[in-house]
Amino acid sequence: MPDPDFVSLEQRLLRQGVSLAYAHRLTLELSDHYDDLREDALKSGATKEGSSSLAGERLGTAGEIAAAVAARPELMSWIYRYPQLARVALPLAFVALLPVAPVFAGIEHAPSVLRWTCCMMLSAMFTTVLLLCMQLSIALG
Amino acid sequence: MPLTPRYSDGNSERDCMAQTNPPFMTGIPELLLLRLLAQREMYGYELVKAVRLTTDEAISLGEGVIYPALHSLERQGALKARRKLVDGRTRVYYSLTAKGQRRLDRLQGEWQRIQTGVSAALGNPGRA
Image 1: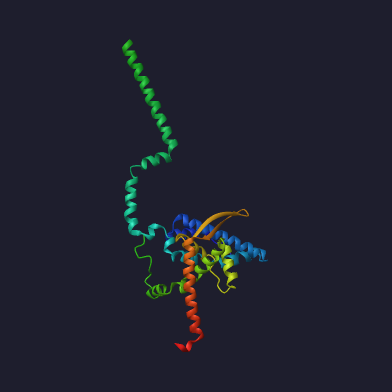
Image 2: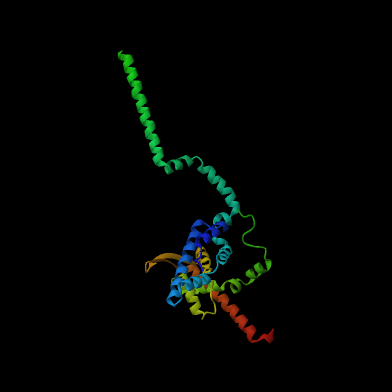
């Protein structure tokens, strides 16, 4: 029996409406539990394949675990628990964040923004020096 | 985003049963978990083994299913969880809070009331 696919379980939980942090925590704990089950089975004399099979059976299927999570609404993300509130709050939050989005984008791409600013300043300085030289040549000449 | 209500799946018979007697139908794993965690803090695997041991394997909880139950109790403030490094592995230990203790006392009381009632009915069925 292959090892349980905890990544698929996590994705399934996310599709089901649990938050990313919770899905990650649950799969980590399940993965630890699976390792403990396998270790105990190996200690009691099971083969490697036998221990994996036994651990998988005892842990339960992804469907059973997903159903147990679905049966507890408090484990769902707030968007699924309060859909009406989410319908109002999320668009408002996006509108509020829109003006500061360029700032966040700037922070995200700080090296590029810095390079662009330096280039602009250099070109401005070059233009200023050029204009000053032209002005001097007119004045002196 | 789901549009249907989340707290009822339209199964009125089950809903009714859950309302009238929730500890009998759904509270046993919760009662056992709270009872064991009242003694000392434990992590998930330890808890499953303790349930099997203390109930003489009469009650065997679905091992993967225990975590949503624990997390639900934690969200409700009955348990608190903390990460602890043990033998090079990080374990999530659960312990009972004051709210959890009150919940355990209430569930124990309800369970004992049901147990007494069922035992009386089974011991003396002709009385009804």
